[in-house]
Length: 313
Ligand code: ASP
Image (cartoon, rainbow, N blue to C red):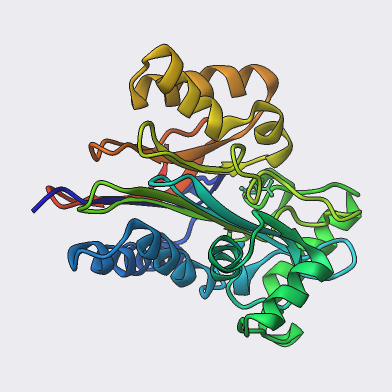
């Protein structure tokens, strides 16, 4: 059997062991394990990397611990506006949604944009019309109401700032840490895929959209180079076109996955103040999980390596 590999993230930021409780740590690790196993089950059966990415992300979206789907953070107006994207490295097809409300699984809607429309990125009301047309699953406002998220919004409003989900020092309580989610996978047929899903940043206004639904910034996949899913302060990831930059460094400069990831995350992003990280893999099954923040919820597994779960630096 050819090799398969999968990696996931649950967001990066100021995640400190000193402010984490034992129960919370177990809850995060269990959630990461469940999600990666959902994706791995697909790969083990010979399924596609695209299915693995979608299934793993749906698992994370359905868990209120993460800033995506059910646990999406609140906007300034008290709404949950979600962004997501997915890309298939085999043929460079991609789909994405931005600023969608009441969609249970934005990653699945992104996939539908990719497979059932002539477009790549749908936004707001138009994306909702499309979701109705394809019978996507909706959920009411109550489903998305998570008390901790609401408290995060009140804190952010007090300081009139837009807050990255894991920017711990802005909160008194170390338990208020959540994150964007993502997955990259390689299937036994040699095809790679990437996906990212988020509620964005707490207290965001004016229809703000980050890097997560932007192909080339927060998500990218190309069988010839790499599959990438980012997490961090989206404005910096957009300006740095992070995911495509890594692919380009591999394609045009011949860098390895590790060299390209290290240069972009630990050097280029750091120089402009871009806090965050990403998960990456290539068609050989190499996996990299670089981040320049205090921590990043992350996990990886392949057909020839054990499950690894990490949270802190
Ligand atoms: N990158 C996301 C955004 O800026 C946030 C995150 O990764 O937590 O919308």
